[in-house]
Amino acid sequence: MTGGFTGTGLVKRYRRDAETVHALAGVDLTVAAGELVALVGPSGSGKSTLLALLCGWETADAGRLAYSGLPADRRPDTLGWPELALVPQALGLVAELSLLDNVLLPARLRGTAAAEQGRAAALLADFGLDHLADRYPSQASLGEQQRAAVARALLLRPGVLLADEPTAHQDRDSADRLLDAVVAAARDGAAVLVATHDEIAWARADRVLSMRDGRITEGPPR
Image 1 (cartoon, rainbow, N blue to C red):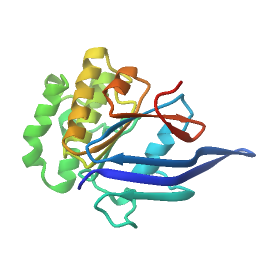
Image 2: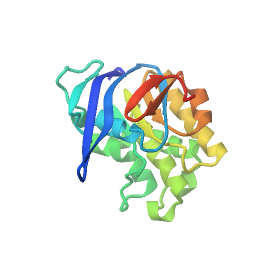
Image 3: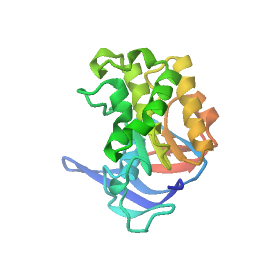
C-alpha cells in the first residue's frame, strides 16, 4: 500500500464522572507518503488518543479518516500490518513468543514467515538484539522489548507507521538506531507519524506538529 493518510475534523470525547473530556477537538491532519512527522505536546494533550483512532483502536465521534490507495469506507481496524503498523506505548509483545518470533508475528499471520526470516534477523541485529533472539520478553529489559516492538512494526515495510514514544526507554545510541530505521521507512515511502517528547526526534522529522488540549498546530511548541 502506498503510504499517506488524512484526518479531517476528528473529534473524540470521553465521560469522566459528570465531566465530558474533549480528547480530540476537531483535529485536521495529513501525513504524506515518504514523510516523517513528529507529534509533540504534554502528557494528556491527546497524542495517544489520536494514534489509537488512526489505527482503529478508537472510533471518532465526528470527522473523517482516509488512507491513500484504499476505499473511502475502509476502516483502519481492518488494515493489516503491511498497510498500517503501530508501536504502542504498552508495546504489546506476546509473552509466550521469543523476541524473534514476536518480530516475525506479522509475517506468520500472512503465512510468509519463512520469507521474512532474514529481514527479522537483520532488524534484530540493527537494534542490538541478535543475541537475545531466543529470549522471551520477560527475559529482556524494557528498552530491549521496545526495540523488538519497533522491529515488528517495520518487518513488512508498512505503508503507514504510527509510533507512540518509540525512544522513551532508550539510551541515546539505541534511540538513534531506532530513529535511523524510522527515517529509512519514510524515505522508502511510508507515511510516518511519531508521538514523542524526544527533541532529537523532532530534529529528524520533516515536520513537527504541536498538540495541546486536543488541538493541533504546525510547528514545535513555543
